[in-house]
Image 1 (cartoon, one colour):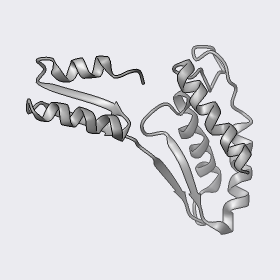
Image 2 (cartoon, one colour; image 1 turned 60 degrees about the vertical axis):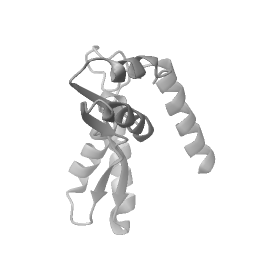
Image 3 (spheres, rainbow, N blue to C red; image 1 turned 60 degrees about the horizontal axis):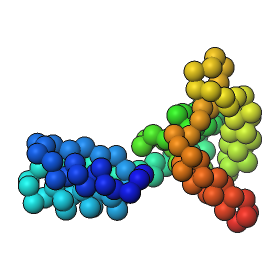
Image 4 (cartoon, one colour; image 1 turned 90 degrees about the vertical axis):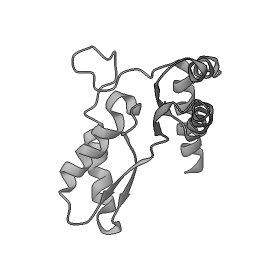
Length: 140
């Protein structure tokens, strides 16, 4: 996030190695910039981490994990569950268990006892997530 000035300066700096977590598009730019100087590079790009739930799964545990690992750190980690594929025969039960689990979560300041969902990392991230939620609601 940002205008890229800091990242561009870092790719030109006298560094032996760079590491970046972010989008695939930004990763490509960084890789191209680092290639000319043969800088070592570690990229963690655009994770879209799915969870798959089969009919023979422990559905209560799977629902707890789906909710927990999608909202931990407000979902702002590269390994957060971003989508869940559920076998059709257990879809309704799984959805009900997820809703039941989610109702136990309290939003609030991250350091406040009992708070399981803290703030977004920035106003820009909050606005992005709000737009995605609004789009999902409009799309049904």
